[in-house]
Amino acid sequence: MSLFSAPFDPATDTALVIGAGNGIGRAIAQALVGEGVRTVFADISAERVSAAISASVRPELAVPWVGDLAGLDACDALLAASHAALGEVSHFVHSASPPRREADHALAVDRRTWQEMHAVNLDAGFHLAREIAKRLIAAKRPGSFLFLTSLHAGTPRNLPHYSTAKAGMAMLVKELAKTFGRHNIRVNALVPGAIAAGGFVADASLARHIPLGRLGAANDLAPMALTVLSNKLSGYVTGAAFVVDGGLSLTNWFEAPALDTLS
Ligand SMILES: NC(=O)c1ccc[n+]([C@@H]2O[C@H](COP(=O)([O-])OP(=O)(O)OC[C@H]3O[C@@H](n4cnc5c(N)ncnc54)[C@H](O)[C@@H]3O)[C@@H](O)[C@H]2O)c1
Image (cartoon, rainbow, N blue to C red):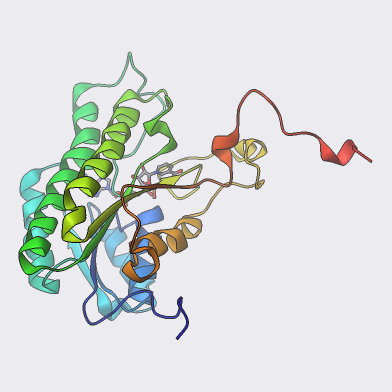
């Protein structure tokens, strides 16, 4: 049988995607149900969740959940709802993040915005992943988790609440991968570049810094996400970060050679 024809087992694989209402999370959640995986679509926006599910190829496999994941009580409610709907959650995807506003630089960002960014990205990520893992370990079931981090986990973004939350998330991936590995639970990061998906208002002129010559789209992330999530395709991969950026991170103070002027 082809290696790629059935990356998931619909009889045992289940998924929870947070931030499934828009952008990259929506594309990943829709791709998972497309592979026959029962998936909880979780987001703060009811309207977005319902639109994301309606536009899925197999909406009957999608379970909606709406709440604000900046609070741990809401995270517990999401866990209870997910386990009630799916049994164990074998695949967890963290793609939820509050809006980033360019005005929130180091001298301007307020305490609430700082805390919300860390709460959704880091605190919710840790709490949800740990609780899902505890149940998988007790049930002796494998799992695979994926966190959307950022190139700005390692370079400044002029948004200190965002870059520090992503830097924490990048280390959380490594900590969890190391601790959960013996229990056959893999934890990896997906690192998008400039993806015109909703959360990032991209200036089209940025394309000139991207070797592949265009901004990314949410659907550029979903195939890599599913590959890394699949135990069949990536069963020996954990603690890794996969950059999907069209080459954006290769940019530095040297321009690429102008080959069109060479004979
Ligand atoms: N788009 C990019 O260029 C880019 C680049 C690097 C990293 N990322 C990361 O990828 C992930 C997805 O990015 P995107 O552009 O698709 O974002 P997006 O804003 O389009 O989607 C994020 C989703 O999270 C939801 N959300 C926000 N706050 C929430 C809360 N408190 N509780 C529950 N849900 C909440 C939003 O409603 C939204 O649907 C994010 O973690 C982002 O930081 C994106």
